[in-house]
Amino acid sequence: MTGDSLKRRLRQGGGQLGIVMMLPSPDVAEIVGQSGIDVAMIDHEHGTGGVQDFVAQARALRSSAMRAMVRVPPGDLRHARRLLDAGCEAIVFPAIDTAEEAAAAVAACRYPPRGERGAGAGIRAAGYGLDPGYYAPEAEDGRLIVIQIESARAVDEIDAICAVEGVDMLLIGPRDLAASMGLLNAMGDPALWEKVDHAARRVKAAGKYLASTLRPGRTVGEMFAEGYDLVLAAKDVDFILDGARGLAASARGAA
Image (cartoon, rainbow, N blue to C red):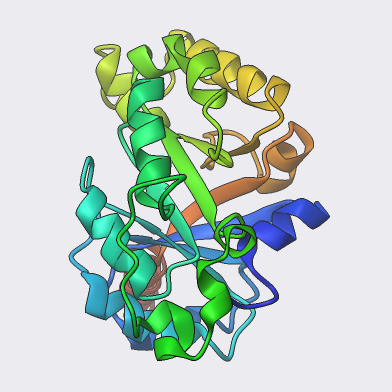
């Protein structure tokens, strides 16, 4: 595990600026890693990448200060275990609605007797066998476990989810939360943001790290001031699309 892990940064304080990385490209990871952005959430829920893509992206980021966390497909604890064996140090479990589901996610990240993860030998995460300390509980506790809250039911269960031992951070997903309330794409509805604000207050009251995507009408700095520890402010595809559209617009304007 790197000495400058995302979990260690969070413990030291100060907001972390993040992006969502949809593209499974190590080249894109290497380029964006030089930008000064703190964190990339590599998306295996909506993106097209897999475990081997993560390994290539992690290698591409090794020379930069950007840290990676990976969002797994909903309910796919096997995928989470494979990512951990491949060296993932921060993992996001989406669509968690109950404390029982959160506890199962934590158990997937821990070795017996504290969890249910299989203890494979020669894995990349343990230096292919050169780091026996990888399996120690204190090393295990250095990995960041993130639970994503993105439904009205999850908000109702927020206190119980926060109380699950081993949950480090809660990531609020406003778009899916809106959908669960019958408000898909109605991102300006006050009822949605009442739910978000309630969840955020309960997360902070529980002493957990708080994360979300960038809220419409807010700046990243404002969200840090409101208590958010990590703000996912854009996607890699946004940069490409915005640049391409800007070029097309400027070329047409000059014609």
